Length: 390
Length: 177
Image (tube, rainbow over all chains, first blue to last red; front, top):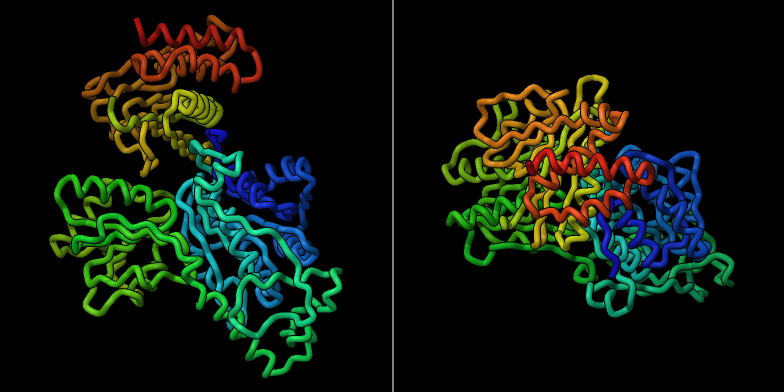
């Protein structure tokens, strides 16, 4: 095991190369530029390729194209680049091309604040392209170490499900430094619970099975599959003749290969949720770090507060919100995004509250003040921000 | 030892605040600590600040935020004012050349004449942060191992090793005597 004090960007690169990534195409953007930088140095050392594209749309198209050619590939960006991925993202979903996409969220909208964390792409990551008729897989780390491990997991899931997987990080993960442990031996990888999938290619002749099956190897061009890779809905034979019947079967597959295999994807962390807590704090990504410290300290003071941290964000883990209680959803945005999913998933009679902050983490002090207000049934929102959207 | 040690360094851009934090962080990893380090770069030319937040622990670190610094290396009056209020019982190390302090504060404040010493004894202000690093190491009273810190520093800073070593020793003596 190698130990470093390094950025999340470095950790993600290490994870990708361990997972077998051999092509990275990207366009530099704070706070994900160091991934491109590290990939440009490290990929050629393992026989891989680095491509600096002219923009994000081209970058992801290149990565998807290389994945169609048989390589494990990746691209990385931040919010303003993620929206430019929309077209190739849809292509990869529709043609079932495995690829890993990293989005380090910063403050938006548009360029916002480059060097500060946000969580504005919670829904954007669920709907990264137009058209509907699909499910997406999104994983959200809360540390550099977890960013490395989830990058590996993202490659694993993308191969098994034949679909793009987004790792939704934020600026504090990618730019911040932490001690990280990078495994070197198979035993160390196994001890860390890492899962790996080799790239295979589909032997055909059919383009895809119109079922919810997974572990069907992707079509790799040039391997005598006879199939084409088009942005139109393919038939089972791989022809893009645009029939409603083929689209119906294809959509079933896009949606249910993920919904029906959710147990393979779902990951979460819970703390103190088994004794009927008065409040359950809900947070993903880096804010969950200070929320966790606040919850632990609140417990030391005798307050019955628990915590839920979804790690896989999509498909959303509804089943974690089965208790009727007060939920406090903490996010790095002011509009409230994940809180709407919690509202939908929680049983009737639950109280759903929101604490939003953007550009910096909620502090432990702020969390304790918020817990106290909730326990005393006082309103949380500052004056002028009282209209709830959820 | 406390279960969590919080170190803050803040000042203007170019004073070596982030580099200082990186050296402390790597040295702490070498000592077996778990470490988190957040660095923020404001738009310094428009009045912003640069800040490094380090948390050291023998256990896994949840919150990476410094909310009650045990050690605060202050390189500017703006930084002192912006974050000094978070100090409870920690140690403030400040450079009197660039920081105007409030002597009435209840915590311990150590003047580290880093910039002036760097210019007078080593000929260049570039050694300011190395002097502060030495002072911080001394102020931790053995928590951060001196020899390990020196070795780490010399690994991370690629040039002027003799000068940096001397600067580190000068700083170390400022907080230990």
